[in-house]
Image 1 (cartoon, rainbow, N blue to C red):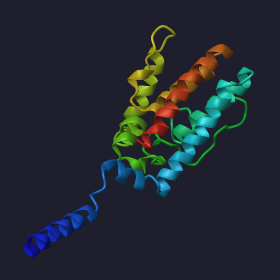
Image 2 (cartoon, helix red, strand yellow):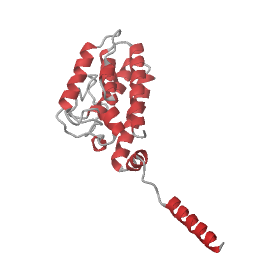
Image 3 (cartoon, rainbow, N blue to C red):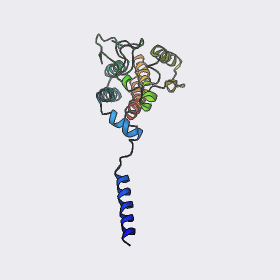
Image 4 (cartoon, one colour):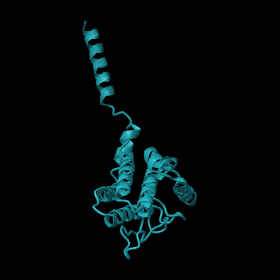
Length: 202
């Protein structure tokens, strides 16, 4: 009887030790831990800034305000070497001026705030989407999509990068003289900001 009790005690201790051994972190846990670092924090802060601008654009009371907010949001995505960066609305000021955009510039410089997260599957798919491997080609695709866009043919889904789609909607807003259109385009832009934000936590 004693032998049985000792054997059962030994099995219990082994089971307890097995339960106490930590399991390897899941990919989501590893990503969430890494997303707390400085690189991820910088991306999160930039997306929050862009989100606030898109809200201003969406709630703007006149075209001047809509254009200024759209300009700032687009500039914060593309950075100083990105397409159209600068005084997009021609008011003499660069709204959203910055030293490094969320995405890489056309020639790959600056690298873009999101580039250090390029090994993260969600960020690579929804935010960067090929802009780190061939930024010139990625930005050229934006030009093609904008050239083909019409109110009855939305070509934006051809762009894999959601921040790049936001730049597309901002560009259309800056080309428009309709406040209603600007508000509609801002609604699309807001969805893409939120997808990019979700990519940090997927």
